[in-house]
Image 1 (spheres, rainbow, N blue to C red):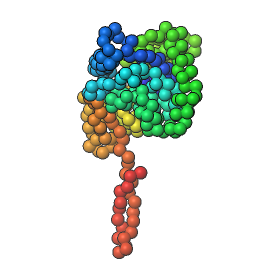
Image 2 (cartoon, rainbow, N blue to C red; image 1 turned 90 degrees about the vertical axis):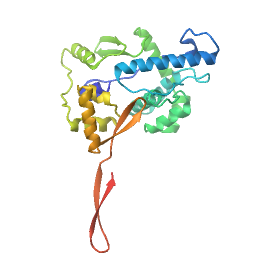
Image 3 (cartoon, rainbow, N blue to C red; image 1 turned 30 degrees about the vertical axis):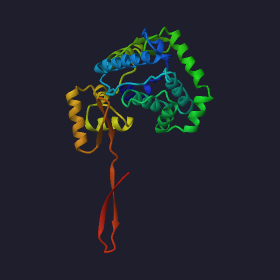
Image 4 (cartoon, helix red, strand yellow; image 1 turned 45 degrees about the vertical axis):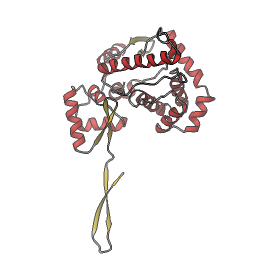
Length: 282
């Protein structure tokens, strides 16, 4: 999705639809036993699925034991409703918020169905906490979520992720994991070849532009956006780290890349008249 956003820009609009995958985890699998036992088994099964998927898509997941669901928190609906609440406040920041929910869930092992965790993630994403709480609790976020679920049902979507690619009155639905080439083919076909990705070479400057634009980036996102292999991607990241332009932070079973703030120099004069250069963060 980031590669599409980066390469197509305003030519392609990306909208996230909340499908509400897990209404109640105790009914998700046919496990026998007490509710606590069933939830523990479900957590283990979901964790296995996450790691199996990560081996294919390359995004990191937590190495810790996954405990997203508990007897008190049995649903993924709160995360869905939270996104709808954020979207009513600021659609751009809502997308950053959705990203943080995903990161916190998959790489930081946070129980993102808890309202206090959601509030923290909302404020990290630049949303006002009071506004978010108001929209989540008293606004129309839940109704918006139900509308999204109905949209999924109308289009026959029962599995996630699924993608509805639309141009005018023509729709194509793609189910499951898809690579960038598939999306590019579909976009070209629906637009009669008129909508094309921009050409962006895999230079260090362009990779830095990508990192700065999205603030928090994973190596595979660079790999996909610039059509690089893993070895070349790692070499470029290593060079940017040596030049102190990006920093790499271990997260889950992978790493997160962030741009290092550039430093500027200020000149001050001492009492003896000598000039001293002081480097300060912007």
